Length: 262
Image 1: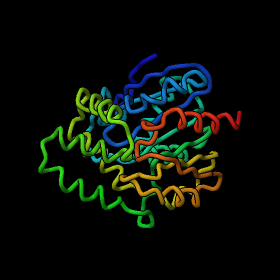
Image 2: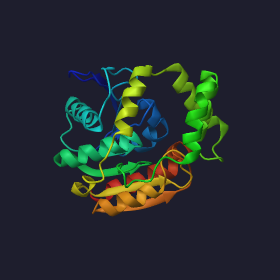
Image 3: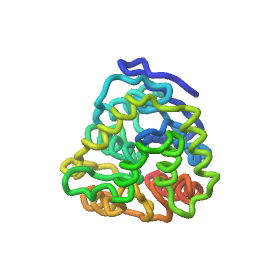
C-alpha cells in the first residue's frame, strides 16, 4: 500500500505486512529506502510503515530550515493517512530526534519507542566524533561520488561488507537528494535540543547504538537512557548504520521489544 499525504507538505509513504503498526523514521539524507534491510524482516509480524521525510525522495521540499518538531508533525500526517491511531515508532539518527518529539508531544499516538544511533541533543550531549568532523571538512575537495562513498563508508564499521556500501551508494546516486532539502534537514539535526524534554517521554523505550559509530558518539545512548525513565540501552556491533550491517540481529531485538507489551 502506498500513498501521499494530503497536507501542506505532501509526504510519500508506503506500508507492508500485517499486524501492529510500526512507523520507521529515517535520518539525514536517507529516504524510506534506508530501511530496506529491516522491512522484510519485520513485515511478517508487523504492519511496517515507511516514508520519505520532507526534503527528500517523493515528498515535498519546502524552504528550510526544518525542525524536528515540524518533521514529527509529518509523522502524524502519515499515521493519519494510513488510518493508524497508535503505532510503535522507530527512529534512527535525525529520525531518532524526530521520534523523540513524536513521543513527547503526542504520547497518545505512541505504543513503544525505539531510538537508534541518536542523541538527546543540547549542550550536554557528546559532540560529533572528530573523525567525522575532519571528513566533512575534507569532502568539499573531493569529486562528488568519491565524497559520497567516503561518507557512506564512514557511517559503517570497518568490517562492513563492500556489498553493503555498494547497495547504499546505488540508492543514494539513483535517488539523489535536493541540496536545499539536505541543508534544511541538517538544520533540524544541528539545532536539536531535546535533553530537557526527553524526561517527558512516557512510552517504554529501547535505545540501541552501534559501538563503532563515527557519526553520533555512542555515549549519547547512555545519556538518553538516563533521561528517559522507562528505557533500556543496548550497545551492539557495527557503526552508525549498524542495522545495515546486522539486519537479522537488529530486527530480532526490535521485534522482541515491541512484542513485550503485546
